[in-house]
Picture 1 (cartoon, rainbow, N blue to C red):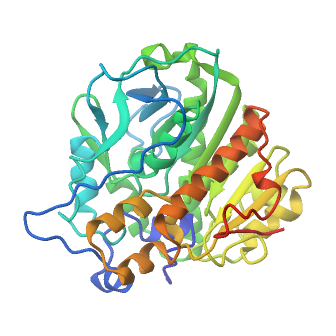
Picture 2: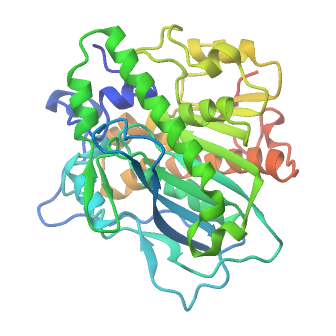
Picture 3: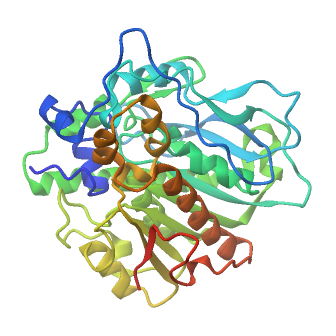
Length: 410
């Protein structure tokens, strides 16, 4: 089966961080090699909004369903992080770690996205958020966003964008989909890995069985997201008093983008969604078959599509289907010179590892990484401000001289 690194959900499952790529595949994509005993500790770009950011993590347990990946477990448990606008944080604890130690160990072992084992000090990386900082409840309740990472990626892999949205006044919940990410660490110290998904992938023998697996991934994620929405009234640290459950949005990358679109299609609580380079079909390669329901039927609420170079609703069959079935508000923008992982923290991390320009271009494209991060933040914020806060800066109306690297696809 041909592996399409930038094909969205199917590519992420077929060759994601949780599955070890053949050496030839890693070489083809370019890999950062670690210097013995000298890992780097990258810094994420600081959020630009007016609010300091706080964060807390919590375990959520859904007793209404067996775990779909480990059916002997009579409940589904998730780890989520809540990111929120905080009051002054100078007296709060040090910035929160990028990943829990056990999850970081598994992520490093997976040699994610061309970064060799030991090249990055994942456990030592820090965010800009303060753990359990006091929430800023001035100004009333705030809109809430759910974020979902790509298949086989951890919930932290979009932290730069998540922190930006929290600094702009949103409450953002990031969701780890247990047994899909390489490692999910729970409060008791246990770490659930992705072996159940890898075992399921090993049983794939043809296109039909791959489509069935991809459907299971999407269905599981949508069920997880709906459950998190059910628990908005029971968030830790008193944060339920901060969220406005009437203003809910969702965004995600790759499989997370598919989940965002599909969750909005199935759940009216989601008022607007952003799909960052996630194909809306259940195939190993884009074909325009096995379309997700949101692609087959469209949706009656706003959806923003942002794709890599060469992928838009004129070239991507499932996006074209969605476009034709959605008469309401929709937009499609392409980040020129980008690749699939440009929409993740790889855009911030990879240039700090000492990677050559060739390796950078093979993994995150020719677009300037700092400009890519700035553009992604601006377009996602503009979208949610427009639909959840009634603030329209008109960035999404068409091409913008502020962002020549972004192409509007009418």
